[in-house]
Figure (cartoon, rainbow, N blue to C red):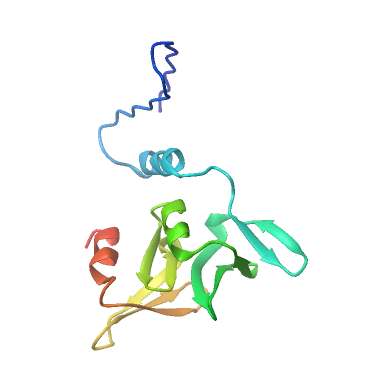
Length: 145
């Protein structure tokens, strides 16, 4: 990857242009990073305090009893953001599969289509989730199906 920086006082705001022959994982990661609404890390809360969330180690975000939780490889942490806020702040590798759940597609082991009315999602740690009919088109689009 080549990088060019041009400083020009006539511009009122910063503008980023990316030129690439095709959309690669590297370009997509750059886009996700630059378009995230905040570069401030998400925090997960435990009884002992707050911990910055490492999104690569986060399997999913889900709601339970009117609370939002982050399911990470280290355990489950409380998150003080709403699902809608998370959906806008998270990279495109997190997709909403139902009203109360966002999954990290990098942690999906397989999709189970044996159910007659819905699709099951099995994560690499064995957690089972379900794609709602309302979210099915969005999930297929995110997976390129």
